[in-house]
Length: 223
Image 1: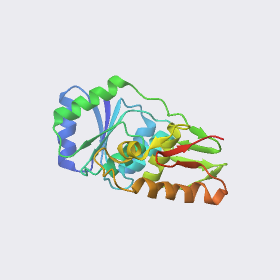
Image 2: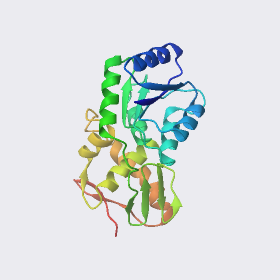
Image 3: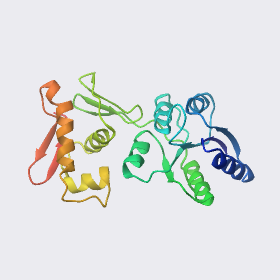
């Protein structure tokens, strides 16, 4: 495999590069986010190992920009943070998998092999429901052609609802898919974030988009 390694902790970067090369892989490495983006755009890699915290651009920004430029090499994101929010943010940015530091080198190899076997994914289709469009790769949302600025969590919630357009999804299911399976099922966080979406997607345009089904959950419909 031809691998791009993006890691600014020099000791770890040297160890990973040495290990990957001993496994017979060709490795380009860099510690800088802007340089990583340039390499990722210019060259065809079989996989990219990408740290989140970097000088210059961070890993989230690099991954999102690569996808926006139609570069679809599998990305394994490395993070020292184990928060669900960070994992969601990485996957939303277009990463294919993540690995939390510290990790065993054997696990990194296994994850890379699995990603390469899966092959290069195609650019995800733009979701359209009525006059709302959501582009998972570019991480953008528009309504009636006007851009709508959403937070990472708002984007994830809207994407989930749009992928199930016409289907009433329960609050519990939303919690499990958009937050975490262990999240408090009695929390009103889903209702709070639906309220945020309504303020951004409905109020400025003077028409509804998300419908509440009392006692059940929420649904978005094209009509």
